[in-house]
Amino acid sequence: MDTAVDFVTDINDTFWYAVIALLIGSGLYYTIRSRFIQIRLLPDMLRSIVEKPERQPNGEPGLSAFRAFSVSAASRVGTGNVAGVAIAISLGGPGAVFWMWAMALVGAATAFLESTLAQLYKVRDEDGSFRGGPAYYMQYGLRKRWMGMIFAVIITITYGFVFNAVQTNSIVDAVSSSVGEKTMALQVIVGLAVALIVGAVIFGGIRRISGVSQIVVPVLAFVYLVIGIIVVVLNIGEVPTMFRLIVENAFGLEEVIGGGFGAAFMNGIRRGLFSNEAGMGSAPNAGAAAAVSHPVKQGLVQSLGVYFDTLLVCSITAFIILLSEPEFGSGLEGAALTQNALALQLGDWTVHFLAVLIFFLAFTSVIGNYYSESNMEFLTGSRRILPYLRSAVVLCVFLGAIGSLPLVWALADLAMGIMATVNLIALIPLSGIAYALFHHYSAQRKQGRDPVFRAGDVPGLRGIQVWNDDDVTPVESRSSDAR
Image (cartoon, rainbow, N blue to C red; front, side, top):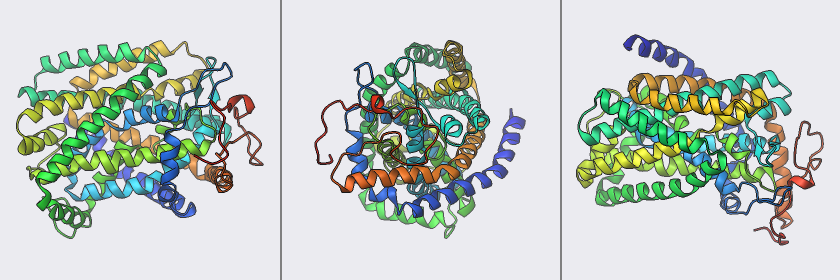
């Protein structure tokens, strides 16, 4: 097991320099080119998320922007926000938090781009719903189906198998801290329980997934935010010192527990990407399912999701840990570090409470990681294989419970690095199309109209599969003034 961990870690330590260069370079380019769209259009993000969905040709309302946001949030808000942040701090020191924040601000521009393109090049299923994602804009936008097929295979492995294993591995870590020991029997019991529940949900399809996510994710995130705020209030006098520690350690100005610049930078970027997924190519799969009147609207909604995930939820975890002054830096620590830090603040009961919270956060992440399904349909052109795929997902959920923490996270790093690389390369030549759509959207907003897009509105676009009049039918008459 140690040999496998060392092998994968060595690959990551080299490969991730290229991934980070691509992430930061492209994100900064999109930010500058769009004149900081991820900041300027924050009001539009909030407006778009509450809009009612467009109707399908059969008269039924489509998947709303909020539901699509909830599915992607279900994937984002999970163990990456609790265990992932703890791992970043344990390996990279407090400075890793700064680089998570920085990556979120830059990554929000990339998130806008990829989800806008996913909306533009989505396709309609037999039941009237939409599906899409990077594989689809690689085929229809770049006209490179071979590239889409490579991505579809990678995301199926990453989300269907590796990331789901990470979620259940973190559940076991949290439960073990709660009961005071970690045994194989406990791992098997937890793995079986989670696998059975996940199987019952994912065989219900995307509507059941989005329905569960829409209810569970906001409630759990709110509860966790309240707990974090209580910890901050109880330690309000230490907050300035905490922020200074984060900034100093981020740039290596002060060596804190061996963190330094390199460790803080690398771990902050990795855990930030795992948590908010900006540029990875995962959230666009959920964003493409929404029935909106303009592709840019869903791009803005997914940018907001990056902020919600990292600047709010991840920050709360970091504050809980850093304000509690636990011992960290001696090795890889996940959910247990957050549990111990919270226990120092509010008592031992929080260890058990956080175990329950992590269980549900990880569970909603697992059911939100349905991305492999739409990509398997892209590969095969059929839904017949989905029962077999779902069965394999359930199996990996179980296997994650009995795997080692270092190996599971190392594999997750490798998988998401490969996935992000393929997606980011595809986005570069397509970025001009996304900004052409943004100019079309902005022109209508300036006229006081609620933006609506139809195929043919932007000259020169090829490969659009929907966006005819039948695909954009308002649920209700739209007022002349933009909402």
